Image (tube, rainbow, N blue to C red; front, side, top):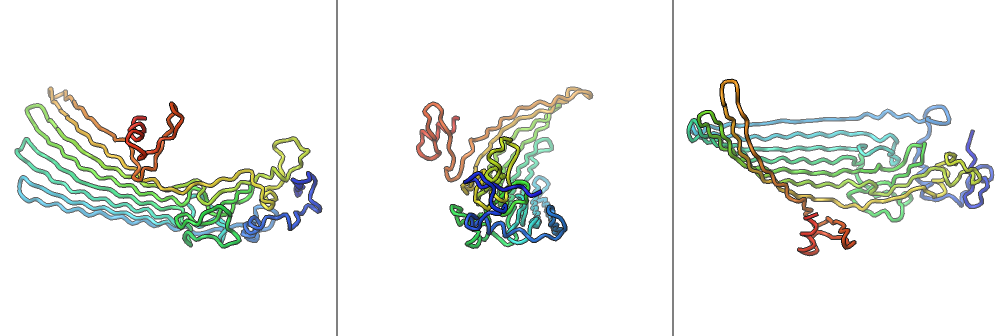
Length: 340
């Protein structure tokens, strides 16, 4: 049976169980109009769609080896892979209603390395490696791109930002949600650059390796929970006010039409550009004590620098003074921040 919709202003049922047109929020009505017509019989679960998903991956590697002399050897390697997947939305048109991976996704990876091996003597060899790896991911982009919605679907307070434009998310409980999903789009780019050098010395029963490396890491990400705003509707406002049962609700769609969300939030759109460097040194000795016993001995030290945001968009709360310390404000503030 159809639930009785109560007027939150009077506490009485709406006449004829119908919300008067002058009480309907125009933006909520515009979103409600995005629901497609049913294509299956029944009062519920009466719309079925079977979209086709495309997922394509291409990858390749190339390597070249060059022996300059008997003591000098070089190699160069380059690798690349790319993925594009299209995940259609569960609702047609602007309605969308999907999750964070709905839309077009791109994943691209590039990597290269160069190596030089120098044989000083049959017992002394040095290996130098230089390489980098770059990954770029962009997921949750609408198939039509990030377009600012038409005027009737624009929610006040949602900025016009080309990076994340789309529809605000309306989530009436027990119904398919409307609008572009949360945590989308995800824009991520990471990069690793590395230099490694290892000297190997075979001396009697010992195989000794001395070396070090340094790695520069970059991690850029933009992924906000609700970049276009997000409303939740539970039916709490249109339930019978005399009913004290907390599990009894009115109609979430009625709450939505009245413009009465149970929750509302919006995220600040900001990308983070994190930087870190990691130098390391190590020494290793594979000691063949006997034919039946080999000891693998070694020590290594790695230093992980504090993560730095390229534009000083980091902060930390100092409990002792009850203040917020932001990187880049002063040398003293930055040092206090890094020590925490």
